[in-house]
Image 1 (cartoon, one colour):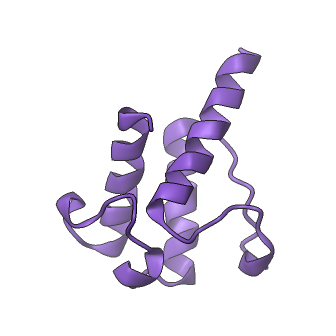
Image 2: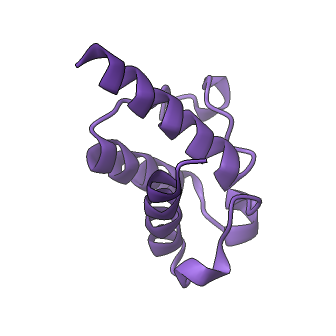
Image 3: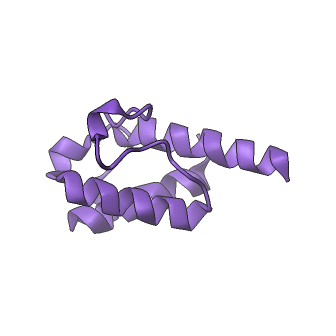
Length: 90
C-alpha cells in the first residue's frame, strides 16, 4: 500500500465524516463513519481532485459502480490503481 496515497485518502474521508484522521484506517467502512450518499459523492470529488483521476462512480446509481466501497482499504486500492495507470500513460 502506498503510504502517501493512503494517508491522503484517509484524511479526505475523515474530513467528510467529521472525525479525526487517527479514528480511521484501511479496515474502516463508510457505514461505520456514518457517511451518507452525499458524503460519498463529496469524498469522491475530493479524491478525484486530489489525485487528478476519475473514479468509476455513478452518483445517479451508486449501487451499479465498479468501485468497491466496502472499506477505506478497497477505496485506497482503487485510487492506487488509477494513479498507477495515469502515471504509466505519462
